[in-house]
Length: 511
Ligand code: HXC
Image (cartoon, rainbow, N blue to C red):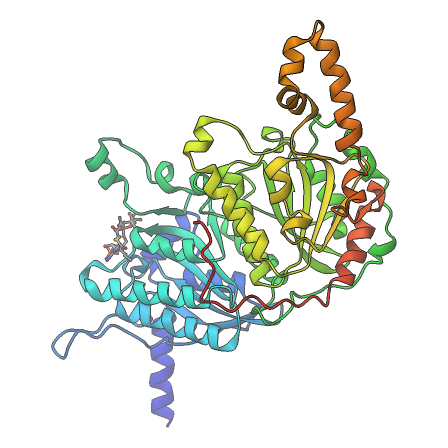
C-alpha cells in the first residue's frame, strides 16, 4: 500500500506541476493559469477535482496524451453554495478541445444539471484540437446540446479569459451571461487571417473580437472587465443574486424596512419637463438597497438599462429607459437587450420592475431595415410570457407602442404605478393634433393659434396624469418619494404569485 500511495502522490504532483515556460508566458500576458483562476473563483479549499487523471488515448501503439487533457473540471462552492466548473488550461496544447477534454466538460455539465447547481465555464482555448478532427467537433456538439438542455434550468455563466475561436464561441453565446477581460479575451468565428483572405481587410484579434467589440458593439459580452481578479470577483457577485436553479427562489438578503423608506431625492432627480434628460441610473440607485445594482451590457444599447438589484432584500430585475442616451427611445438593439434580460429574469424567478420614460420607438429607414419590428416584437413576446411578479412604474412620458411594450397593464403587468408627471398617449399633443385636425388647420386663418388651442384640449382630455388611473390602466398615482416604499410593498404582495404556462411544445418567439 505504501508504494501505491507514493505512486499516486507522484502522479498527482506531476500533473499539478506547472509547465514553466508556458506558465510564464501566460503570466506575462496578464493571464492566470486554469487552477489559479479556480482559486480566485471558488471558496478557499472547496474545489473537488473530477477527472484529473483523464488523458487522451491514441491506440495501443501511440503514447497517451498528458493528464487533465488541458481542462481542469470539478465542483466547489461560492459563498457556500455548490457550483460546477471547468477551466481550460492554455498552457497545455493551447487549451484546445479534443475528445477527452470534451468528455470531462460533459461530465460536469451533466452533474450540474442533475444537481440543480450553476455551471461556470472559464474559456481559454485555441478551439477544436486540430489533430483530433471530427472527434473534437463532436465534443463541441455535446457541449452545445447540454447547454441548451440546461437553459432556463440552471444558471450558466461563461467567462472568456483568452482566445475563444471558431464554433467554440457558441458556448459563451449560449450561456445566460458572458464575461470578458479587456486585452486578453477574444471571440470570433473566423480569425484575422481568414478575414484578410476573404475580404482583404487586415484586422487585429482585438479589433475583430476583443472585449470592447463584444461589450459595446455585438452585444455578445454581458460584462467586460479590466483584469481577471475583478472579473472573477464579479462572477461571485452575480451568483449571489441568482438561485441555483429555476425551482429555487433567488437568495434573499435581510429586509431593510424599505416599505417605510421615503426618498425625497427621487422627486428632484427627474425634471418635470418631458424632454429634459437625466440619468436613470441615479433613480435606480435611489430605489435599490444600498444604492447597489449590477448593470448588464453597460456599454451596449445604452438607451435601455437592465440591472439586477435588491429591494428590501429581494432580488429584482430592473428594466429602465435611459433619457440620457437617444432620449431613451427603444430601437432594435435596446429591444434585443431588454428582451433577453426579461427572459433571463423570468427563467430564474426574478421579479421584474420596469421604469418607463419613453418617447417611442426610434423612427428611421435604418431601424426599419434593421428589423426593429422583429426585435420590438421580441421584447413584447418576452414580457407577455413572463410569469414572475411584474411592476411597471411610469415616471414621465410613455407613448404609443413603446408604452405597451414597456410592461403595460395590457400585456400583463401585475401592478402599474405612475408618478404625477406621467403622460401616456398614442403620441405627443402636437403630432396628434396635426393628424386629427389636418383639414381644419389647413383651412384656418391662424393655424398656429388653432393648433395651440387644440393641443391644450388634447392634453386636458387625454394626457392628464389621472386619465390612465381613471380607466384602470394605472393602479395608483404615487408620490415619487414613495417609489422605493411602493415597490417594496408591491413586491411583498406579489411574492406568492404562481402562474402555470399554457401546455404546448414551446412558444415561437420572433428571433
Ligand atoms: C491544436 C493548438 C490549437 C488547436 C493552439 N494550439 N490552437 N493545438 N489545436 N486548435 C497549440 C499550438 O500549437 C501551441 O502548441 C499552443 O497551443 C499555443 O498556441 P500558440 O499559437 O503558440 O499561442 P498564441 O500565439 O497565443 O496563439 C493562440 C491562438 C493560435 C490565436 C489561439 O494558437 C491559433 O490561432 N490557434 C488556432 C485557432 C483555430 O483556428 N482553432 C480552430 C477553430 S475552429 P505548442 O505545442 O507549440 O505549445 C473550431 C471549430 C469548433 O474551433 C467547432 C465547434 C462547432
